[in-house]
Structure formats: C-alpha cells, structure tokens
Amino acid sequence: MDNRKILRAASALLCTSVLVSASALALDEQAYADAQNDAQISVSDAAQYSVGLQKSDIQRKRSVPVLMYHLISDDIWGSREMFTSPSVFRQQLQYLKDHGYQTITFEDLDHLERYPKPVLLTFDDGYADNYTTVYPMLKEFGMKATFFVVPNNLDRQRLMTREQIKELSASGVVSIQSHSLTHANMTKLNASQQEYEMKESQRQLRELTGKSPIALTYPEGGYTKTTLSLTARYYHFGICAGGNRWKISDDFYTIPRYRMHRSTTMAQFEDYVDQSVSRIFTDVSASKWSTPYIEQVYSANYMRGTSGDTFQPTKTLTRAESVQILYALAGKPAVSGQTPFHDVASGAWYQQAVTWAYQKRITSGVLPNEFRPNDPISREQLVVMLYRYSGSPAVSNLLHKKHYADAKQVSDWAQPAMNWAIANGVISGIPSGHKVLLSPHTNSTREQVATMIAKRFC
View (cartoon, rainbow, N blue to C red):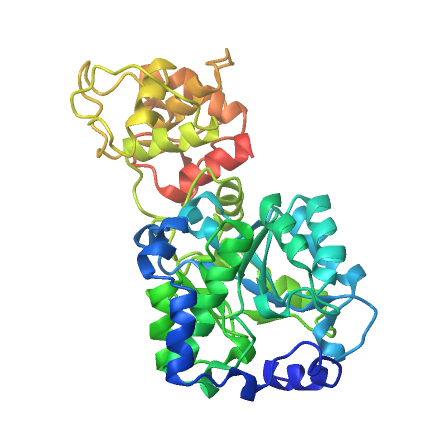
C-alpha cells in the first residue's frame, strides 16, 4: 500500500482539522509576490543558519538504511498500517542497541566515517505520539531520530505543539526537518507554489527552533523535476516516501526509505537495517574465512573500507595504515610534538598516528629520519608493532616448538614479538601443502591485520 493511499485512508479523521485542501493552497502570482515580501528567505539567508555540510566528504557508494515511521501507538484511529505498536518499536530499538547500530540524523552525514553501522530513523507528519511515546524511548535508549513536521499543522488535534517542537529541537535527541508548509503534494502545484511551500516551511521552522532545516520530505512522496531543482536550492537533502536502501551517490534529492508498517516483522526489520560487512562491501563474501574478523574490526571502528563499498581484503597494508589502525585501537588520543621523520608531512592523514606511535615507541621508523609511510609492512614488522602496543611482555620461545617450517626465517629482532603472537593466538600460521608457515617477510594484507587485531583486541 503506497503512502498516498495510506494518507487517504487516514483523511476521514484528519482532513477537516489537519490537512489543508488543495484549493486553499492555490496562490496566484500576486499572492505569491505578497508572500515573498512578507517572508523574504534568500538562499544566502538560509545558508547562514545551516550546519554547513560538505557533501564532497560524504562517502559515496556507502549503504545507509533509512526507516520511515508515522505513528507509534496502539490507539488506532486511522489506517492501521500507519501505526507501529510501541512494544514492537521498543523491540526494534533494543535490537539496534544490542547489535551496535548508531542512530544518526542528516546533520551527521557530514561525518559518516565515524559511524560503522548507521541507521536513520525518520518520522513523518509530526503526530503527537512522536513527542509522548517516541521521544521518551529515544532518550531511554540513547538514540536519535528525525521528525519531519508540517508547520501549518502544528497545535492541532493529534499533532505536536510548537512548544514541543522547540523542546525537541533543543534536546539533541531529535532533529526537526521540513515536510513542507501545508503537506501539499508537490506534483499538484506550480513552480511558484512549490517554492513557497519549501521556503516558508524552512523560515517558520528556523524561526521556531533557531535552526534552519536541511532536509525536506516530499508530502505523499510526490515530486517532479521542478521539485528536485527547487529542493536543491534550499535544502541539502530531499527524501522520498519509500523505496529501498540508500546507496549514496551524487543524488541527494531522491533518498529512498523503508516503510515501517503495523505488519512489519522483526525479520524484515533486521534485513532493512543489516549493516554486516558482506552487505556493505561488494568485495567481502559472507562465507570467506576472514569475514568474521573484518566484521569485528569494522564494527569497532578500528578499520574502515577503502571506499564506500569496498574493503579490499587482499590489498597490501602500508606502514602508515598500520599505525593508523593501532592509533584507532588506542582511541585516537590527543598528541603533540614532532617526530624526526622528514617524510611525514605536517597535516598528513597519518601524521598524528605516526607521532603517537613514535612517542609510544611502537615504531622507530625504517631509518632514524625516515618512516616511509607508503612502504608495505611485512608480517613480522606488523607483529612487532602489535607486541610493542601490548607492552612487550615476556613470553616463552614457541617458534620451534610449534613446528613452523620457516621459523628460522624470523628476524632476531622480531622473535620475542613472534613468540608473543603465537602464544596469544594472534598468529596461527598459513597452511601451505603439508606445512604451516609464518611467512615473516611476506607483506601483510588488510584481512590479515583485521584477523590479528580481532583475535587479540576485539
């Protein structure tokens, strides 16, 4: 059942007190000109209130589930499918919490790399139970959501009040965004009317909350090419009524969502929000040996993808990437000071990590004044870094007791670290025919370091 039909089913109770009729929206050119004079909102005016999203930084091809709710209540007074039971919604939030998902808002998309398992919870129309039921649950679970509201419908029966909207916006829990001024279907309006719906809604919500909305949801899911063009002038994002998972591209104005219905099962919900690495990355197979380890380090935000939809498990790891992973493992503490390495430029993406690793004596570089950030790192070099990160504990000599065929190839300076890695299960060896090899001088791959990190630190 599409969103338009759902809204029609509810209109028997809403149309007279909530929804504004199409005739009431009919603005002639003079009326629109008068409205512009009364409520001047230029693009530059709106920009000064916006959060300044840098869309160029948003990870392209990243998979992000966006869920669309309306009402959370067992008091069903309209179309049953618009109402999610509070007990079911609680179960859904508990699932997100238990499985390490991060609920984000559209403002957070500018720093999407911080969220390994993001989910956008959105609620349309501004119903009163969004304040009385959803808001308390969000606070209870420490989660966030986006409420798309219709300014002209506030303070009406079954809908939120302006005072509630102000409270929600200031809470840090709810992001208030636009659902147009009057909930008019954009496909039934001319360009001037559409523009007024967008601009005036933005103005009123900014005046109410002190924050300019950056996202617009199209009422009843209706939009035209003109709608998309106008939305791009005033908003950072345009959101549709339904569809599938949002895979981020250059199009920020037809963002799809999963419709949440009364009949939505937990199995469907779990599939909608699934952010397993085999779902996110096209080059990570669910059945591959390294996938469980990649899952652990990715969920812990120790390692990211090489792009929005690739992890490149077999790609050789560089020295810079190695210290960056350990720096993430340590929680990225603040660092100051310098290193003696002339090949580590100030402001480089790995500069803080190298500085931290040098100060912690995790690395001393390849030469006294060279770190060589782009060189590949061997398996024994990586093990030494992990060993030093762990405090260089004393361990027994296990290299020869474990019968590794190439144990003698381990460099003298790496033997304590390799013994530690064997004793703690960080390395178990690489099968090769009837032998098991340590391959100490082979370059480390991303899936190998993911495995080592997961085995010891996750």
